[in-house]
Image 1 (tube, rainbow, N blue to C red):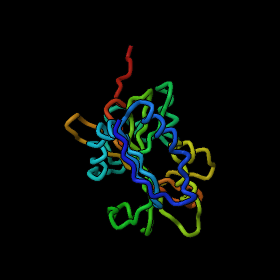
Image 2: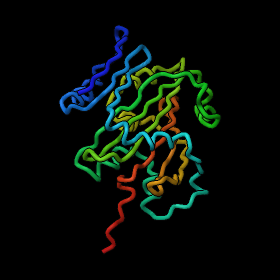
Image 3: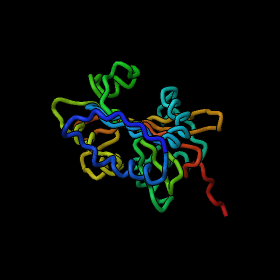
Length: 228
């Protein structure tokens, strides 16, 4: 097993919620690389990361459209892309176990954000960047990419920093004070065929967050309904 470690943690960094992912990799002899510093933790499972990395690169190439201007080819695709509740909860209806693997979880300056992202988030100076892979019964279904600005008047972003491998949707939608005030959708053409994506701005206790969800080829949204 290949194990590379760069360990420069500061005291008090919340790393307990990363233990399960690390233990899984160690027990299954999966090559991993751990990067840890004061900004956050990257746990990269090499075999898994290689399988989804081509899709990660698509996130910055998506052309978003408003729902009212978008053609939904089937009612099922419309249902998934316009789901107003927790996508995690919807996916649980199609599997025995839904898992969350953290690909990235760290603070970044916002100089690299697209102009539209800056505008949707109110031009923050610093954001928490969270990328996860959601899998149903160990099959990759969705890549989630979330930007959460750090606000002086709110500690919610710091609480979300400690989320670890818990579902963001489970955390957000257990609150009564949450709304989705922007929803955009996209058709993404790839070498593997058409993929679907959506981007939401959620407001939770006056804390905005921009959530992008890219549906991978094995996601339930692509499964044809039984018409019989």
